Length: 460
Image 1 (tube, one colour):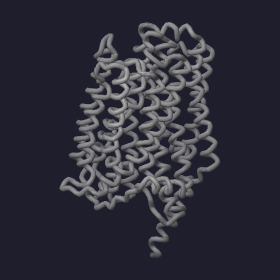
Image 2: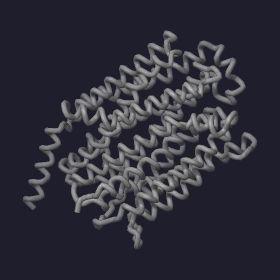
Image 3: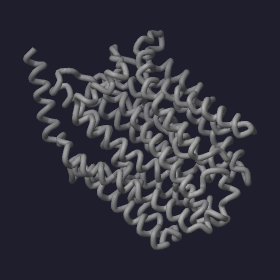
Image 4: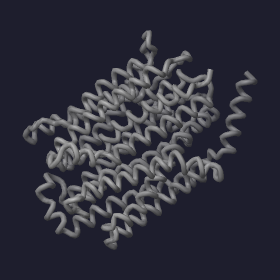
């Protein structure tokens, strides 16, 4: 029995809510605790990066718990539902910090952010691991994976488009109050979307979920050179995007400045978010009619590099103070990222077949568990790099009181611009070079691998 439109829609709705939560944390937790509440940028960056090392052990452990679960509602839905409720509560707590002294706030942030990561993992791993249990054919699995990743991109784009608009509208002059309201709204949407997903997605296929230790997770990756190329590309691409998303709000506040900076930031984010959705849902299907998946991937990387290069030129020449001009590279970068998000998921799926042919072991659950981890790792790397730059640019502590000094300092603004546009160029250049030199899974190669696997199975 093929998946119904209702099931695909419900799964996609779940992805939208899930990634709204993740995007809010990944893009705004640094700004909230550093700029709004006044904690040291270096401290916030260290906590965000340390949480990623914790995830390296927490994610496989969560996989073991899910694999051992047996309930009348199935293996995955109880974890998705309970993890969602807990994560929604912790998300609200993360952006509704009480008034505390600096030391107490440091402890509060460290504890709550770690809890947020744990509870998010509780629902994220079973959400993606559920795919084999609700599908019967490889085609259905690929289609459902693409629906999930595309809708996840929509969720991220919605956060980019509306967060600061709602912070200003609901909080007035108090960003602290605005973020609290936004977190409450996103948490409520999250709970509703996952409830819809849990009600509609019922396990139809008995699924033996293979679990992996940290050692097995990394050894499986190292045995599969194509999976390593894809995972490395995910880290580089997402680090570039998260670094830009972390810095763009500071750029609008302290570089463009002015009383209406939130409105211009919101407009830019709306254009960028719409471009990301357009890239995934319109540009990618159109380009795939003419080009192979690897050609679209390389084209997207090159165009993203051109977008960042144009942004850097604008920043160095002062043209970045024109919102209309700034939107040009912004649209290119976000649209390309939308296409790259879809393609990295497809390539990771293909690397599973490649690994099976090469090693004789099919380790899809192990390989895909890496995707959740490396996306988190990318956000941690970007946050740490952002914190270092904010310190060097003297925007590292209670910047609301030092905005005038920062604006007057040409070196501070130059450092902000260079980090926002320059470092992503380096990361994407490495991704282009590695991908062109090491990636071999063209569509012809994938078809050849599929036929070889089928031949071996038929022979048995």
